[in-house]
Length: 308
Ligand SMILES: C[S@@+](CC[C@H](N)C(=O)[O-])C[C@H]1O[C@@H](n2cnc3c(N)ncnc32)[C@H](O)[C@@H]1O
Image (tube, rainbow, N blue to C red):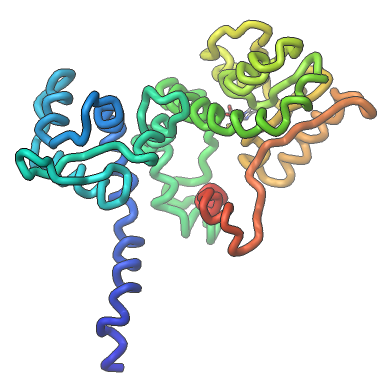
């Protein structure tokens, strides 16, 4: 017993502390992205940047930051590998440089997770986690946050809806690079492609830009398509996929089925079946896929988190 908590146990204790305080990482990252720090560090003409330089950049667009807190924030994110920390050769002060990870958090990067990080500030996004045991695992009715209908919330809260849609656009830009790299020829033979639950149309924009012969119908809830930007050869149609789906040669669905239980997925798939040609029609589904335990790609991809 005496040996149980001595040096060999330090590694597990450190990992236990990291798990206990994991929220600090997510919210510190959120803070940095909200302030635009990854953009400041990534776009600096000469790096590494001392904290005083980062503070000056923040001061140029807002109130003066607390340099001591900013220093601790940068040190923590460097410890996590988001930034690289070194010592400024002239002053000996810590200075920060971009890393491959920090580039994913630049708001101005073409491929960026910044909009996904920014979604964390919304209570609608964070509050269900406080009630995971009661609400999801034990399925107790009347638990503090109840079963939330995410789509009713996005309909009632336009600002949250805009943040949610922006996060979907951010994720789609990344995913569609990978999808079109392996499946361009699959899209080229389609005349009308219907994206069911297509959000504000980022997926169809990527496909129609790549395949000029394809016309798209972006189908989503009315309040979502009302906020969708115009896009050549893409028509936005509002409605519910439980009532019916516009017809096309092929239907595309990305990150949609995982939002619903099996019963609702069957209703959606039956509605898809009604509108696609039995022999020549196509249903293209892009979703999270369960991998084998220990699968390296799956461990790296963080899909376990998304599945919860
Ligand atoms: C997780 S998002 C995925 C968005 C998009 N497919 C993407 O990958 O970026 C799910 C989408 O389904 C839409 N949705 C939810 N219920 C719907 C319904 N009944 N009919 C049509 N769209 C719906 C939501 O508004 C949201 O845009």
